[in-house]
Length: 160
Image 1 (cartoon, rainbow, N blue to C red):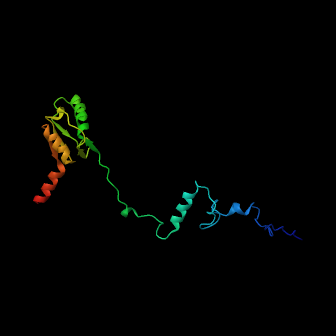
Image 2 (cartoon, one colour; image 1 turned 45 degrees about the vertical axis):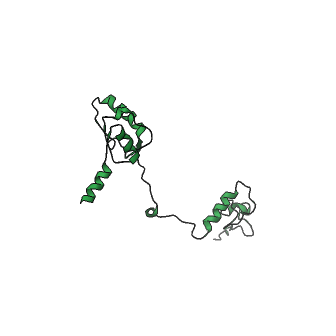
Image 3 (cartoon, helix red, strand yellow; image 1 turned 180 degrees about the vertical axis):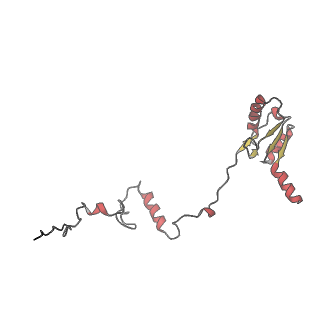
């Protein structure tokens, strides 16, 4: 039995092997090749992205920093003295005999000194984790007592 010889299609002699223009299958997008090739004639809006690619290829400018070296700032939820009177009014409307305002339980970490305190805060006792000296000074001038927990902790540690 005689078999028919298979036709081998390997695109011999074809420059692009059936994939159109040479430029279309480079694998580097429209950059124009590998490395910094094709960055010569660019319009002004394209230049910054070309400069960025040059910076990446300089020694010591690539990679990332491991998480242990990245400094993460803790976001403190703070409240100003001026906003404190509004908060006290809202809480007094719910609770008539409000004598103590615990900012720690309300989610505030720090008391800041911007603004002027109102006379509604006169008889209040304010408890907060940390406060600026200006805030404490302003509130004590109207007769309000401010208890800063951070200072109490520091004094306890120094005694031990």
